[in-house]
Length: 231
Image (tube, rainbow, N blue to C red; front, side, top):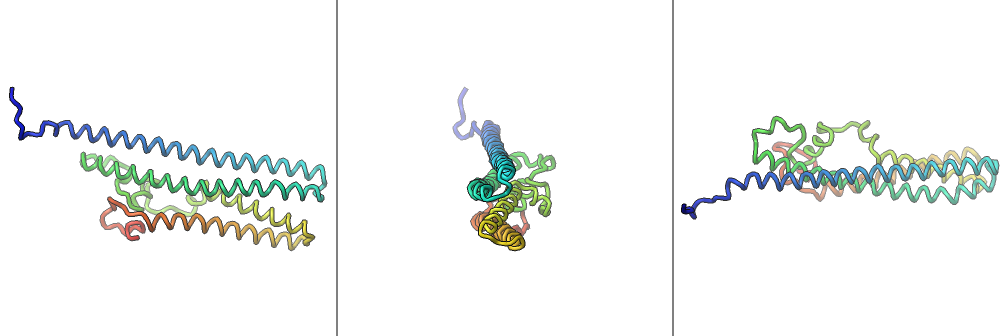
């Protein structure tokens, strides 16, 4: 039996090999997403544990000192630690969300490759095969726009709100230690809480804005005017 050198005998095996390589990469990205979400839950749980322990410690100190000078000294020592842990948790959660978005982009690109190999399977996919902003949103939430309730339920937002409240309490205790009246303590606490919330929101918005500016999709949805595609 002679082999015709003009015939590509590897063509028949190329299709299954491509699918195997794509599937391997898909499972790798999926496993990495699982690790990312585990880290999000772990870091959030660690922060809430630290916060709960601090609240219990402060309540015991308040019972022992009657909210006196000893309580204020103790609060001024432990609340900065809680704020530091909370700030680190917030920053890491924002970065983890960015990393998760990149993983979704990668999985959308692989899905695009699947449909190039087998376009007849398109009706069976509920997630997107496009790697622009609309495609990422469709894979995340199966719609092109997320409401305010969806955003407020995110781990970074929850941690950021808690951080802002702790910052307000810390500022109020400082004001009390300096001899401020109750009304001034409340006003200082509210201003500190709003300032902390604005700072954290600006940090997250800046990070996401940088991602939108720098990212260039390879397989955008045709006719879609996504922010990422037009940046």
